[in-house]
Image: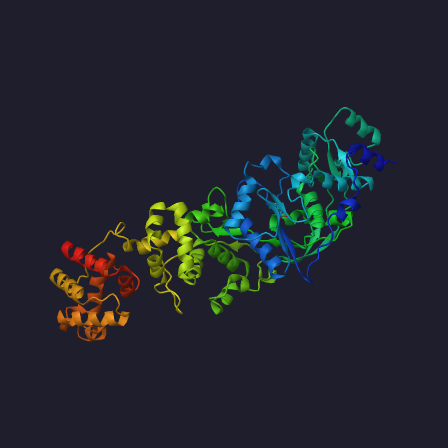
Length: 551
Ligand code: GLU
């Protein structure tokens, strides 16, 4: 009969704490009824992708909507995948999107009473529980070499059997103490495996918050829980951490569903209640070449990287709002009914999440972004554009911030009403939208409407210079357009022109187009009278003159 206590003490002589002592340091959280505790558990691989943000938004909403806690845990158990500065990349990415963690790792330490929040600093905690499992006879050391494992794999392949470490392939499961000690004496490296009592004949029920009710096959593999460097695998770290840290809902990618039976089994072996799980569907896109659906790929799709969005000038709020349209099928309807409310007023629910792949569509993101920006206050747009351009376009930044009041006044045009203008989807759109406001960027195309002769255009510009008043209302301005139209043989009413086109050279719209081209150097610009009011009389008269001279 194996003396597991002896073995556990031999393998973990440095572990002197008991599980109870560890647990005492992680008291039950005092939270209101129904409050959810969620976490982000990214690995510091140096690459944060849209899927990370997608999951984080679910975490954040579930926690903060219920008065709970959302925390950041750095899952740095895989040294091979870790890169220098990886933690900074994670923290920067989330702070850029304004998803506030209540506790967890920070750049220079951590906040919260349930740490350490870096798995690499928790080795002894995991080992305490591994030692305990071993004492119960539920874990054992395995000295298998790579060669032995690949030999088993080849045999399983040849026999068309399931791969892995189970049954007769679990060759260290029932070794004697003498055999184990002989390996230890030789200084052979080993991992610790969990002794599974499961069978693939058995099914277990799982009720997933996203995928719904399902049956999964029990795990019969003796999986590795502690690697040879004394650091746990994801499976064991997940179970220990989410138990101790009081996580109530684990939101993670559906790629983890396959190993869910392992996790449920480990929770049961530890005597702990498993959290609820929300396995989120993969983000997919339509492949431009094949027209078929596929997963977003790091190599092919720059939009998978979270850094892409700031670089392109997508405001963080727009990306989050777009992700919410992917997450909850009823969000768009809510948004239409509540155009002005902050997104966080929307009652987010995992029940409205689709279990199948969400389709990422950058054009849709652009539409959502236009809509979100159209509802922002001009001052907010100003602040964000100023901050963005400072980093990404310093030449424009200098002009844009030279006269703050003017820039805000310009951004205010067409804002605030029931149907706000939607010219801006990304911050890079602002420069081409308002470049004509700055003489330094003004690059006019003075091509006049076909129906207007050069002589007429020159004369209209002259006439307008005589009557221009920067303080006119848009209606007052239009009255002046009508007068000039009539004087030159253009219909003052478009309708009149349409009824009898042969009687006129054109219509009032042609006149205002001439003025617009002179002022903005192009055919499209927001409300002209507002533009001219912001420009001021001097600038307007100079523009009219410059256009005349160029014709
Ligand atoms: N470290 C895991 C990953 O990066 C986290 C999975 C989880 O949230 O449990 O995929």
